[in-house]
Length: 188
Image 1 (tube, rainbow, N blue to C red):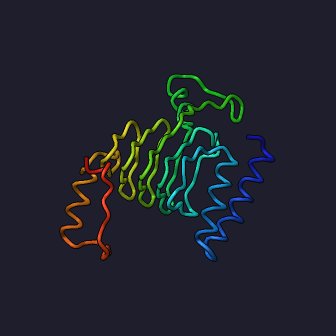
Image 2: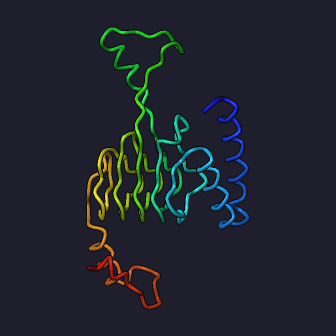
Image 3: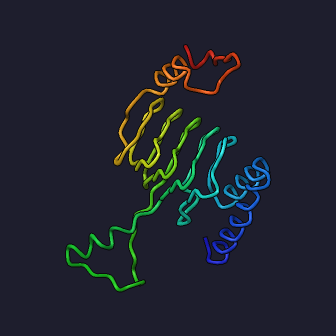
């Protein structure tokens, strides 16, 4: 992405973020359109993306989301890692400042029906399956299977999504009052 496009992207994002305080639905439509225009691959419609979420501008096309995802406050999604420059110095290779900066760049894929808790950091090369809940403050790296709950630094599986949901419903720990229509495909 050229410098001018990057500047326009940042300015556009700033304007779109202001809409969220007025109309959440309009904000989501505008923000999803903006992210797609930047190159983020979004299948379907996200449930919600908080305005403070940070998407690595190194290469937006390396970020893909499934349908019906929630990205909470201050989530960081990184596709690059500049630590190789420090690692090269450790083995005697010193690069001139701003000349020859080296970095790794890897894709990030987040499946459908996922929830990323506040201040989660998703590192380069991460693949998150469908129906995954990521606990607040987690640092996520690698392959995360579908239908699980992960948390921590580094994030580890702590529960199965369906088991946790059933337990929470049985405990009455939700604000769901109307009868629940279950998806037959999910319970097969």
